[in-house]
Structures are given as structure tokens and as C-alpha cells.
Image 1: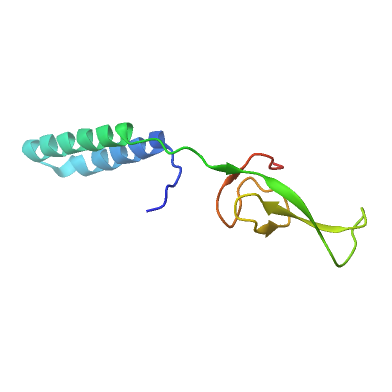
Image 2 (image 1 turned 180 degrees about the vertical axis):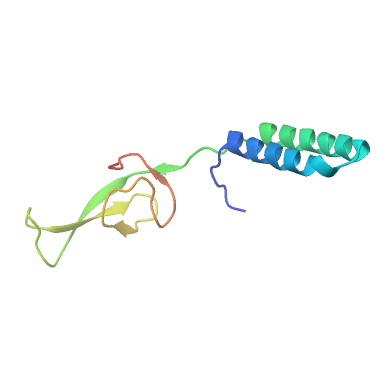
Length: 104
């Protein structure tokens, strides 16, 4: 499984909302069992290991071919996967790394 960066708070809220919506038609015993399971899931989410965001940066690469206003054609290249991109986006569309020098 990929190491996706997700909002722990949003995930906890979603689990809680699902449990609340399911609890409407449960008996007392079923509700107590579901509540224990919900609490265990919440604990697992809160105690899950944190994944550090991997970062890279855009490097400007001069290309041959047609000329631009500065006399050269250039592209931005990811320092991690070396895939070229038209602009300095926040994340590399190829490897998904967060770019430190993105132009927002």
C-alpha cells in the first residue's frame, strides 16, 4: 500500500459519522459492541505511525529547439525522479513528492 498523506482528523471524523449513522437501528447490545469497535478503530488511527512528507524541488533544465523570450526553451525537472514538467507545481505529477520551491 502506498504511503499516502491523509488527514488523521478527517478520517476519525468520517469513522465517527459512519458509526453514528449505523447506530440508529441497533439493539443496546449491538450498539455497545459497535461502540467498543469504534473506540478501538479510533485508537488505532490516533496511534498509527506518522509518515514524513518526502520533498524534492524543481530544477530548471535548458532544452534545445525552439526559443523562448530568454533565448532558450526550458522545462522544470523534478530532482527526485527527473521527470520534466511545464511549470513549478506543488507536487510532482510523476512521483508525487512535495516540491519545496513550487510556484503556487
